[in-house]
Each structure stands twice: as C-alpha cells, then as structure tokens.
Amino acid sequence: MIAKEPAKVLKELKPKHKFFIGIDSDGCAFDTMEIKHKECFIPNIIKYLNLQAVSKYAREAAEFVNLYSKWRGINRFPALVMAFDLLKDRKEVRKRNVIIPEVKELREFIDSGLPLGNPSLKKVVESNGSPVLKMALEWSEAVNLAIADMVSGIPPFPYVRESLEKLESVADMIVVSATPGEALNKEWSENGIEKYVREIAGQEMGSKKEHLALAAVGKYEPDHILMIGDAPGDMKAAKENNALFYPIVPGEEDESWQRFFEESADVFMEGRYAGEYEERLIQEFLDHLPEIPPWK
Image (cartoon, rainbow, N blue to C red; front, side, top):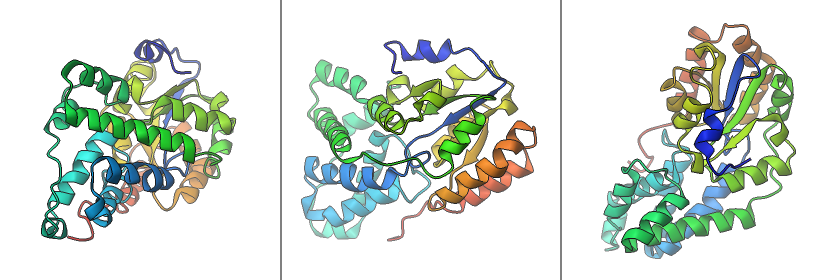
C-alpha cells in the first residue's frame, strides 16, 4: 500500500462512508512499543552513540521519552535528541566525564520541515556529508534492521480486530503512523488486518497531522473524523485538524480497546462523542503520562 507519491494517494482518497477513523499502530493497535524500544532502538543508541559508559542512564532516558512520558510516540529523531538532553542534565553522567553529542546538524534537520524519515535524511547526508547526520542515519537504519529481525508474531491487542470488523462497513479507516511503512505493512499484513484499512500511512508519507489533513479534512464533517492513538502526539494531530481523539491508555490497552468496541465506537457514530465524553477520556489518558522524569 505504500505509493511512490504518498501525499497524492492520501489527498485523492475519496470517501466511501460518512465516518473516517485514523488508527496509530505501535503501542496502539499492536503491543510493539516495549520490544521495539527496549530491544531495537535503545541498544543501537548505546552502540552508535558510544554511550557504553553510561548505558544505564541512556536506557532510562530513552525509555522515559519514548514509553513513559507525555512525549511517548514522537518521531525517532526528536526523541533521540530529547534523550541526549536528559542525559546531559544528569549528574551521574557528568561525574563519568562522558561527552554527550551536541548533534547540532540533527536538530537542524528536525527543524527543516523535511519529512523525518530515512529517505529525507539520506538525501541530506549525500548533499552535505555531515558526520553527525551520517551517524544518525546509520543508527536509524540499524534500528529498522533490528526491528525486521526481532519483531514478528505480535498480534493486535484484543478487540482491535473486532473493532475493525465492526466499523469496516460504516467508516473509512487508514493507518496513521510515524513508523516506517515497510514495518507497518509487515505487521498489518501478517495478522490479516490490512484488508480493513484503505491505506497504510507511515513516516514516508509525512507527519500524522499531514496524514489526517490530506486524507480526511474537508471530506468529512469534523465530528465524523476520529483519531485513535496511544500518545499525546496522536491527540495533537487530531486536534490540529479539528478532529476527535480516542485514547488507548498506556498500560490499559486491552481495557481501552474493549471500551471502544463495546461503547465508544457507537457513541462516536451516534454523534455523542464530542464534549464531556471525549474530555473525560482524554483527562484519564493524560493522567498516565508524566512530564518530569522519575530521577528528578
């Protein structure tokens, strides 16, 4: 489902139903966040950034940013920079005289407006030869290889398949994710649920905000557009498009999906979701995601 001109594919997506639902993948539809970050992302951060001397603290910083904070689910490159900043701020790291990279060029790439994926980064590396960006690209490619090798056989959370089956005949659904498209296609197809969604949009197709804007805004009534996600970034993408948000609460994913299947999907389609109902679910969600790391 990955197209050569992905923006065009989403832009030209025509409604078949009056409802639209965007669904995040990692940590939302699939219980893949823990294994991907703990076994694939973080070991390669330590390896490629030469953080062996402070591996314990590097792991804690990366886990906090990517799994256990309000930044959960952000793109890998801003998350990497944020983990560096947390590391630089730790007295235990300073005591060990370990130099945490400044990664100025990586910050500039993040702020450039380019899609934050390997293809864009590779083009920048080829044009300017930055050692910092080359390191970031090698790390990111190593992460993808580790995920391809490590992450398989993981089914969707309970009630995901049931929810997709329930909504297939009444809503246009797409995957809205910051994960590379190749990994998304593998995970959705090996579980036989790719048939329920009209497109699988990964990081190569732009940001989640852009996915929703291109695929849904102006084609459906605002209160007929719903984003399902497990991270504040998913909620932000929804709200910046004047869409509704259904949270999958980290640590309570099974219960969140069961509630969606048994109750919230119907509330959404009956036009009763916006307002008090959504606000209550969002507050419950935000209460699970702190801003201050535990070591502070």
